[in-house]
Image (cartoon, rainbow, N blue to C red; front, side):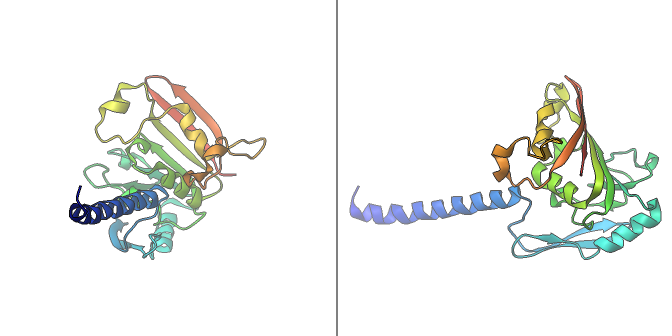
Length: 231
């Protein structure tokens, strides 16, 4: 190849490399629950229009989070149970419910895209977080589990049911982002005897939570039910 052609090709390659580097950085930021843009995201809580604020570093905050918690206490008492993605059974629940939209999750207290985390709640404010057939729909499970850890009070728990990897429904649903085996939840837990992470070799994953795995019930070809507790 002649020098003239090199001069034409090299800048194009350099531009492609820079674009790839930017895409990698975006993926890294999303992986640990940070967003590569600044701005505002609107959502609804107790029929009020609220906002998430995303700063230039990708950190998310909600100016209304203390008001939302006060409303939750007014509605549901001192100990708040958070139900994520309740579907169409919301009217049967007596807890703080969070859904994506009215068609998917009817009559929820809060409507928000949970890929943005639980930024609408203060630290150490929730007694229990429950979900049934919800976690498999999330793109960023690590960020979500870190957020659960942040908003739970000490002694609080995460109770979740997900499809087992061997279930046909685990892979049949086109909206599912991941599959689960019983070992999947150990990544977010510590050994109750030693206090050491179950998977210390993967500490660079951005996992901040250190739950105790209190229960893991596996029904192959059906589901996995877990209880994780914040010490």
